[in-house]
Structures are given as structure tokens and as C-alpha cells.
Image (cartoon, rainbow, N blue to C red; front, top):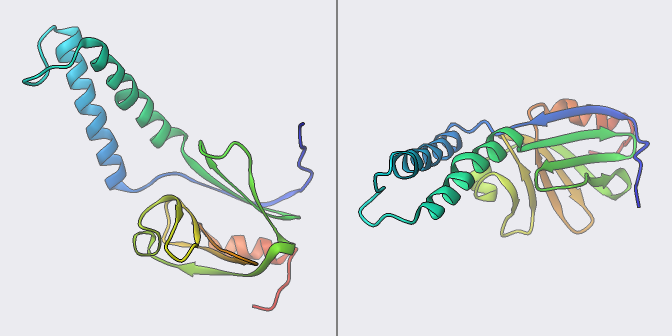
Length: 174
């Protein structure tokens, strides 16, 4: 069954990973796998004191030298859309469809400043010990939604713009 969204997009924000440490880790791992692949498979010299078979080296090279850097650094993004019906988010490549927070289900919302490490233990799709859900990409600013049974934090580069768009369709006492 195909669902066609008819809600007009009022505001859209796309966030990509910007943490230098993440880039350093991913590119270091990719560099090591490329080095091992070239050394052992291309040049025929063993990689390490107990080298793995070439098939394993090739598999690791494909996964950690090519696929992971492309997926994490190129394709991963958080899309936040304010629409007439609610707030829609999609954490690509983890969500196949938009996660919808309808205005009728939102009791309260506000722009916040927070530490992704302290509140959620890092970035990505997170749940903390309080049961709060976090969609955290690249900012220390965000939107906190209070729903009936859950609190949701969505990172945002411009939370004021997101709030402004939401307020055009959903007035609550803040």
C-alpha cells in the first residue's frame, strides 16, 4: 500500500554528520583496511604477523574501507520537516519512512541547548535512562517534544526556525 503525503512542507532542515572525531575514526579505519588490502591482496605481502586469508581481507576492505565510510559520511543524514499536520523526521539510512509527530499528539515543545554525550551518550538514534528518545545528528541545539508518554529530542541547526514553522499550525501554551 502506498501512502501519499499531502501535507505541505513549511520548513525543511537536513543535517549531516559534522563531528571531526567521527570523521577521524571512520577515515582511520578505512585507511588501515585500504593499506591491508593493497599490501596483502595487490602486492602479495602478508598484512600483520598472523595474516587473514585474502577473502577475509577483501571482505573487510569492502565493508570498512568502502561501504562504511560512504554510508556513514555521505548517505547518513537527519531530515526534519515541519508540515501542516505535524513534525516529520527521517534518519537516513535507518528509517525507510518518515517518523511522524502529529500536532494533536504533542503536548509541549521548546527549543533547547543540550549535550548529546551527557543526555544521550552520543549521537544517532538514542534512548537514555529516562526513556527519552533522541534523534541526534550534528548540533547541541534542538527541539524537545513532550508527548503523552514520552519525551523526544530532535537535533536542529536552527531550532527557532523549526519552532516558528510549528507555531504557524499548532498553538499551545508554552
